[in-house]
Length: 71
Image (cartoon, rainbow, N blue to C red; front, side, top):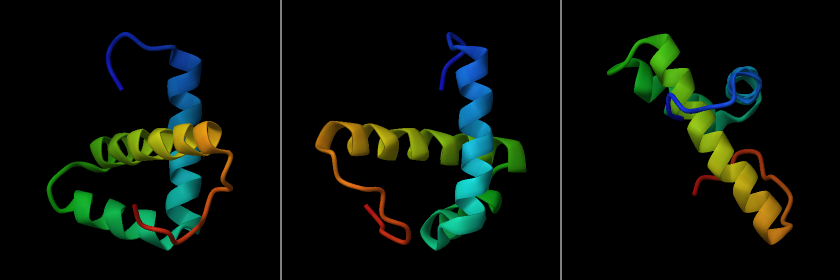
C-alpha cells in the first residue's frame, strides 16, 4: 500500500480487512500482535496488505480462501 494508489480500491480493502479480522481467527491474532507495536489504523493497513496477498494467491492458483489457515 503506497501513496500511489487507487483511493476506492484502498478504502474497499480496508473495509474488507475489518471484516476479515472479525471472521478469521488467524488474522485476528495477527491484528492483535500488530496493535502492540502500531496504532489501530496502521495495523489494519498491514492486515489489508496481507489480505491483498491472499486474494492474489486465490486468483493465481484458483484455490478457495481458507479461513483459519496461516501462511
